[in-house]
Length: 185
Image 1 (spheres, rainbow, N blue to C red):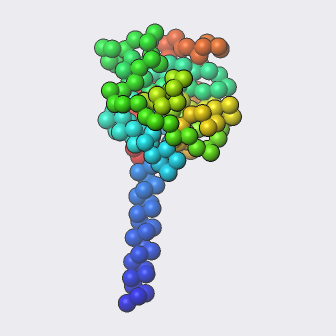
Image 2: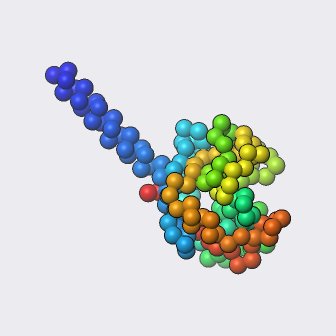
Image 3: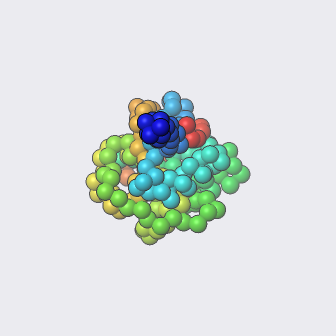
């Protein structure tokens, strides 16, 4: 009987860990292809929860990459002013808005800002992240322990690399690319 109980526990644990792994994967659809993202709920649980909540409600759909700096990062996620299909869309204000939800407290970790990392964008206040995020094109060690890392691109980084780049200094983009959709896998 103990053998069956042990086998049941092992079987249940394997199924549960497989389900949890799927719950922490997202699919970002760009016009260039699909990008798979793995989330880090153990490192930034509140940022992961917010990201999944907004994504699964469709809030990121049609939101532009308003700030894209070649060799650095692509920023998106302004669900207030950055949604190109919304009446409140304003490219000159994109990057200044967020969601109707309260800002998040910082969840800094030891995860380095390397190629493919997703991190929460914020103002100079570490506790001001809301809906915006960025994806690193290259390593950015100057951001380590300064911004809340909550995920990483695990497939499709070549499609992220194709996102239209902005002005070299500001990163502001004319006629920017957008998120087609972003959902849990």
